Image 1 (cartoon, rainbow, N blue to C red):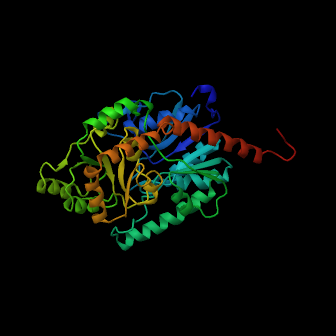
Image 2 (image 1 turned 45 degrees about the vertical axis):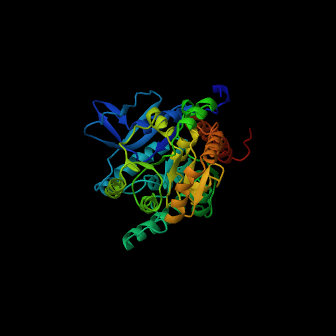
Image 3 (image 1 turned 180 degrees about the vertical axis):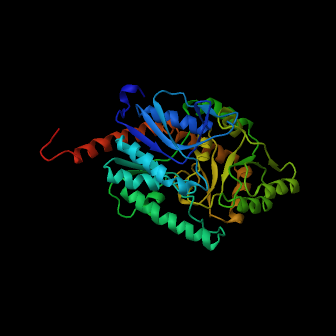
Length: 403
């Protein structure tokens, strides 16, 4: 799409998130994936002020400097045990920053608490257009996951405060319809469902390359994600033990030891692979597999589904709200009952029994991705924000003032 078709937001725009940068030798450095996403905000935003925690120390070798002149960094203290003591300083800086902005874009995720909790009341008091995005509900305890009473109490507090914040926003974005349904109660503004994808146009496999990739596949399956209970890894372990499927696993987390032991019990059939850098290397890896496995217990919408679909790889997923929004049983993959290891085992074994069917599901999955790139996500969101800003400004004009 040409630049003329993109809604440009030229008004002062403040982005506030808990994602930290590192300051070293007068420059700010970001994780590569966050660096990519941050720069893509400029698809729709002319100039951006990023308020975020700033850490010191060594810069990881793969981090990138933020040298874009259209991005201004507003440093906030690092987050940690001193954050409560730093709260007055954080609030004072945000008061000034929000006062100089017209749009305040924040979130409700982060440790030890979301900085959006501070920004929301200030934005409301100062009459700014307030936007909140929701990509996960990390604070919730998924069904089937054990949690202490303290953890459940914390989840209840997060749920209450986050609902209040979202109801106070002028515009909200949710990755799933279920998040919108369950988190909004009496919203003052408009809400939108906008799945989060980080796929670039060059990652989209074409038809001839897809046919060649499927001709070379050998029925192996892939799990790529955090090795935690909430990601369904304990269920996956039980399913693999009850199946004959050949599975490769990539990831780190609390259940890494259990996965390593599983691979040791089934050498060759189950392999624990080294992590692969997200980007061309990861997308090339996806081409080797007949399906990915996403057995999550939580309501999140894993971005790996978009990654796989961009390469024509179908998915075997748990029947959660986030997964159901993207995977329709028998079309882009297979849905299995959440937490059911026997059903998952049957689905894993079903790949080898129906190679042609999974190849067609892969083609159907690829067909969903043409308008689901990372850049398109920012462009579409920018258009919605620009429209909301016009309505917001009209609503704040003195009586008698018209277009």
